[in-house]
Length: 497
Image (cartoon, rainbow, N blue to C red; front, top):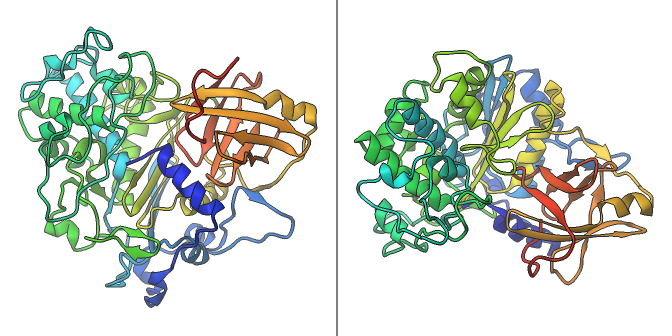
């Protein structure tokens, strides 16, 4: 599962004063050498965490303090610099039972980051002539067919639409299955029949007209790739992507192989291991990749090199440019993209007990991967900010700054009604600042970072307005969702940003 629903849930817990119970505090602190290389950069991350908004006198806190505060037992980080893997390191423990240390080789569930590897495989198969990027996906499907919808998808849906979440198909994400229970086949998942625990994947919006995040669409892609490739999806990924890139500690496998399980991080919630240690995700293409921060770094570097025009990578430079070009709003194929400023691409992911994040520049070899077994994005945002500050990447995360004060006239420029990506928000200018109202009893006062940047502290999201204030985009704490100004409410208010 990934998405705004998790953000809203966490925001409600923050407002309610929810505090994680650090059960992992009972574990002895692993030896410093257990986590991997130690250098000036890793020590900076260990000791210089700051939130985006600081007050006078605030001092950086340590990574260990933040892990205790947010109930995150383990974290793994990999940094790309100058086109190479600069370093990878783990902190904390894999689980609060064994208390074994997280290392650079510890595998985590990558949740929705799985979609990045899926997209690379799909686009590679397009280049191999095994399926069409803009053809009806039913042309590639053999073992299952997407039911026709003459109204919403009169010409079917395409692979480009599936990879960019513009197919109009439903089912946002998946909740997983306890180990030991019967697992549904991909076809059962798509038809929503037992033992599947999610609805059928069907058209809910007109194909090609709007962005609507659909993990269900990626299961359609999974079946299409297996049918067109003549092999199971996991085998195709190993043969065409993971193996050639040297991602030896990665696999689309539920459950994980014994080899991966020897150094695996269990999922945690509120500082304790989730029942069953993790959830199984038979929805492999959208959510089923086990991997390490180091291995994901290899995937990002391959995409970066191809994007810069270098040949001999998984995709041609021309195909990579298509992958990193927005189809709708800020979504390319398999990744979210930032079209303004230096070109960047990212994805995050949430499975039960895990939160993961990756972001990289497309036009230069710089980027970062962060994996946690605690399911809290706040610590990830702080780590990314520390890395970005250390390496001088203000486009990836702006350095911490103090809150600004604007005039009522300046706040009024941002006031109005905004919709996009299934979200509906009303912003109101008051003498004390800009307030966000999304149907809750009390509107939230946003923190002012600049004349065009504001932050929701309850959700951990920073947004930036265009110079004419016709729209704003989430630039930190979330994929870059875009909301556009409208004259009047188009629908009942549904969700908060």
